[in-house]
Image 1 (cartoon, rainbow, N blue to C red):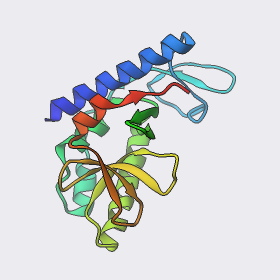
Image 2: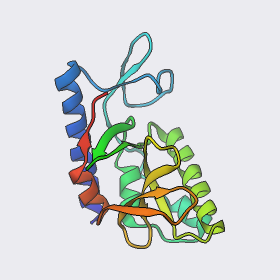
Image 3: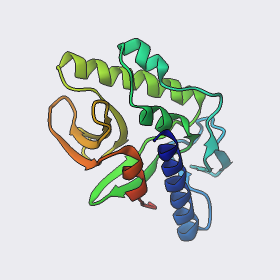
Image 4: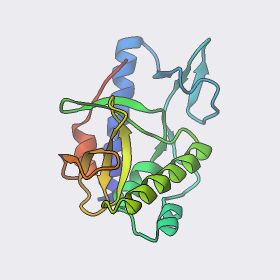
Length: 182
């Protein structure tokens, strides 16, 4: 399953970059990441950066999150966050608009781990089953996450038990995801 997630993420990223090039003639652009160092940066323009995905180096995983929370995480989550460095990618899962989150650099990966720990601490305090966020949605109170108990990908209302299943697994979710060029 681990390699399925890695391959599905690489395939989606390829589809995303291809769609961007088809519509704009260049690599994906981000104003939000302007001025933030990353191995992904191809070029910088007046107000944005153009990026392409890069292999995730050095070898790492989410074991720091596991140690901090004293839990074992879904192998799919490890693969999702350590396949590549890339910019965040807008997409559709069915009719659900989302922005797939990615680590932009080694420093950003550290921040992502801290945010995952904060998310898990809040869930533990509220006695909710653990999830690991993968994407934001237009509703700032909802995120797309992988359920650590089942491996399903869900849209969850932050701080509540409200969850709607989007896919049976992370690899299926990524395979069905449709890129959105903004």
